[in-house]
Length: 301
Image: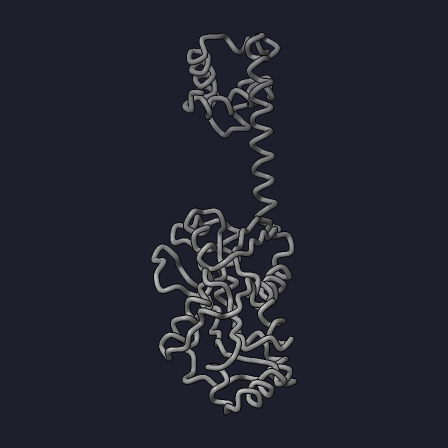
């Protein structure tokens, strides 16, 4: 298609609908000679005659009728597209792809999205649950728009919105701690060195973070029982299977009612930053922009 003809097509459509050069000129707010010149230029470009002039006005040639039908359909489609975009903008319709771990999804993302969807009820959200490292990979490959992750040391291609701090602590059931102290004849300070550790699997970034902490105090995690989710880890610890490293903010109720108790560690584990991450080259899509602005205005932990 010759893009230079697009303005001429609009003039031709107006002439065809008005059945007169003067009527088209009035509708388009241009002079009659300008309309005539545009029609002639279009005819020369296409190599056919499009209109016939008579004392009764303007009629279309056979070729003109064929072109009119196609142009009418095309411009109606464009108009429908504009209406759809206007409707999307007015109602806040859009689609956002979010990546997150199952634990952060339950405790941080879902409460946040509940408030966001109250403000933007027509927004479509797709959530994929996977590890932080996989989430970062999906963002960098443009397979998701935003990820909720524990902030990594690297990943320079990403921008971040802080979502608060989380604190890793070791906990057990009261029964497990009491039984271990009695059985091994140890003090509460020695529980972590003598317990059955329950940790996330070795590929998890949280596990790698905790392994570094344990190694700094020469505590081995080689024989730790491994699980693939924080929720399952919490259930294992509550059952009394051992001592687990769990995010403190996610077990406030259990700590308050003492169904879980915090185990003493050689030192306090450094808190970690949780953040929403997105690509620096993220297109200024209205849906994603709405969520980013919402997140920036929200107070987290």
